[in-house]
Amino acid sequence: MRLTIQPFTVHKRFPLTISRGTTAKNTNLWIKIEAEEIEGWGEASPFSVTKKSSINSEKLKQELIKIIPNLEKYHPLQRQEIESILLESKLNSSLRAAIDTALYDWLGKKVNLPLWKLWGLKDDRCFSTSVTIGISSPEKAVERVRNWLNFMDVKLLKIKLGSPEGIEADKAMILAIREATPHLPLTVDANGGWTLKEAIVMSDWLAKQNVKYLEQPLKVGDEGNLPQLYQRSPLPIFVDESCFQSEDIIKLSPYIHGINIKLMKAGGLSEVMRMIAVAKTCKLQVMYGCYSDSSLANTAMTHLAAYADYLDLDSHLNLIDDPFQGVSLKEGKLSLNNLAGLGIEMRQEA
Ligand SMILES: [Mg+2]
Image (tube, rainbow, N blue to C red):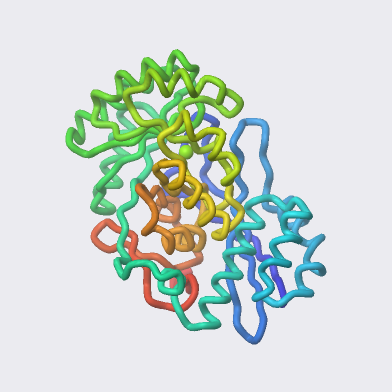
């Protein structure tokens, strides 16, 4: 097979602030494999889970270029050999995700089936996703909620907390949103912005605000406090930054209620499927999340949406220049098409 890499930059309509900082744009990599005149597409979007760890698309590109000659020896059906190379070369998980996704896209096109159909999933192709409100002043947060409500039929709001200004600022944001939309259910993602004590206080308080669950309350490295939080928290606890792959699930499972699976962390749709299986075996709930991913990666994850308890695949909905068109919005839900593979095309107006 032949492999090509093309960087592309996407800009957010509304910059997003979380506990670790603000992003307004992201340069991601579009990875194409080609064999037998069929192309398979994947996306790598650089991400970080702590303030210190960061990688950009240029570094990712250089990492991948080194192993292209090794990968190009194989045919897209030789998955096992390709997966071995990806793991042995310790390639960044977002690059592995892009290649694995491209291999599935290729396979779907080869057998002329959309991936959801190839995997035998239900012919119910519309799925609700939460939409995200970043950290801001209470007024700005309400304005952003109104923007989303004008844009689509919102069923679930995900509120970023863990404000650098402390939990009183977090509470003020929630109270303003509650006043503007008293009935819309919320989920909360602190992105590791709280101490154990703050997490316990906030869980008690948020449980009275129609919040469904709490995502990553404690920072990466503070997993030792999860057992205490698990005992004290009235809200279900989901982990995101603390859980990359299936091996992470087993050690955390006694102290959490769910996990946030992301294509870029997992390193591919194959690993996403393993994570779903492990999480379900451990009786955990699963949600799917995203970074600054375009429609390409979010469509790939939507193909597995039938297995999810919650979707949080909204990053592409906040882009002004998404080059791709895949999953579309129908009555506020993500809707998969019937095209072969991922069902991704170039967006006409791009
Ligand atoms: Mg998260």
